[in-house]
Image (spheres, rainbow, N blue to C red):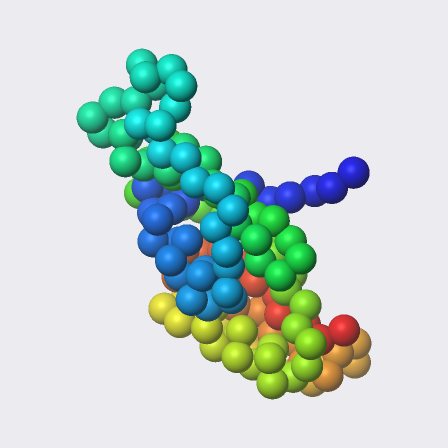
Length: 133
């Protein structure tokens, strides 16, 4: 059994994909737009170019995402994605990249459980915990 996050970017999915490709080396495994749906009645003039479903590979994990209902206001509350770095240098690099345009929640520092740990919300509001194990 696996748990894979599915994030709704409410109309900003293309922007999010490009951001994660740059920030964490995400690889697009699959991307389907509403206009590509087998049932053409699902696509409207408003949603045709929006992302109906996508799947990104980040390291050994899969993160799925879409444009959701396209409200333009993604909300990610009560959840964080945990990203395990190889060492403190990589952790700092990932923290900085994910924090570009975002907000530091806890500065990267040494803790009792890790040589490097920090929390940051990216520019979409997705919370990330970067940790060296």
